[in-house]
Length: 201
Image (cartoon, rainbow, N blue to C red; front, side):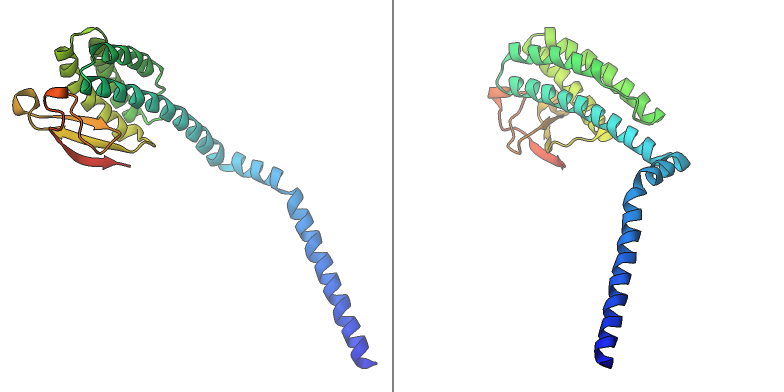
C-alpha cells in the first residue's frame, strides 16, 4: 500500500511538473513578437543590420552584373571578336550606372566613385573602338574591376591572371572564371601566354 501511494505521489508530482513546464513554454511562445521588437527598438542593431544586409545584397547583384559583362568582354577579346566586346562594353556602362554605393562607408563610397568613373570611361571606349584599342582599355578596366571587387567582394569564383608580355613587357592583369589561361590581350596570337596570380573565393 505504501509503495502504491508513493508511486502515485511521484506520478502526481511528475504530471504537475510537466504541466508547469508546458505552461511556461506556452508563455514563451506568445512572447517573441513583442520581445524581438523591443530589442530592435532598444539598440537598433537588428533593424540596421538587416537594412545594411539588404543593401549589400542589392550592391552585390549589381557588382555580379558588372563581373558578368566584364567576363563577356574578356571572352570576346580572347576570341578576337571586336563586335561582341563592343556590345558587352555598352552593357557594362549601364551596369556601372546602376551600381548602388549607399551601403558602403563614406571612404569606400569615395573609392568606388573614382573606380566606377574610370571604369565607365574604359567601357565606353571598348564599346566604340577597334580591337587594339579595346585591348588597351581592357587593361585599365581590369585594374578597376579588380579594385572594385576588393571593396565589394563577390560570390563568384574568379582567377586573377597576369600576362608578362603585354604593354611592352610591362605586363597586364585580367580576371577569368576558369583556371585555364586564355589571354584576352593577344587572343589567337598568344592564347596561353600568362599565369594565374591568385584565386578569388
